[in-house]
Length: 174
Image (cartoon, rainbow, N blue to C red; front, side, top):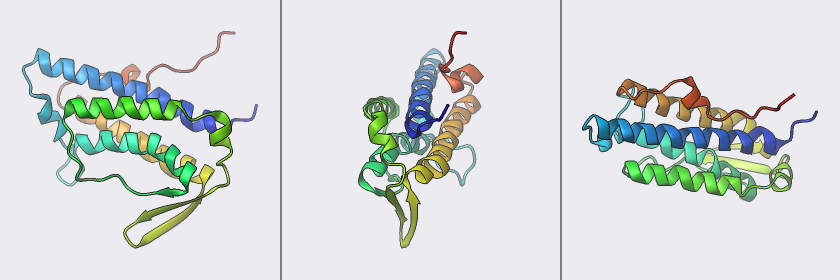
């Protein structure tokens, strides 16, 4: 069975976006149950020189819906590290990223396999094919930021487990 670019990327984005939505909900419930201001979570970092929780969630949206936009239009830039959003805004951002990502059809994504993509950061530009951009750059970044967001919530005591991170797996009955 050949694996399509859409199946390898969009389906994986959707699975993890749903999982991130769930961990955000659990994080908010934990804050409410323990009289913690959720805005404290928004600014939490695992280490002083790492980006805060807010940036992790923004990057999850950026490396899913934003990556699909990039293969459509041929250009990708880093997310705005200075964008300020509260906890509710981050939840809305993930919901929007999920909705936008879900609209990407197999034919549309698969047609981008060999499309030229330019990732520009400052003066530096990297050239990718659509497939290389999604599979070697976007997906690893997407999972890195999802893992870091999960780890930040765990570091604050939110009771999460592997199932929360993995989300609903795609399985087939035999």
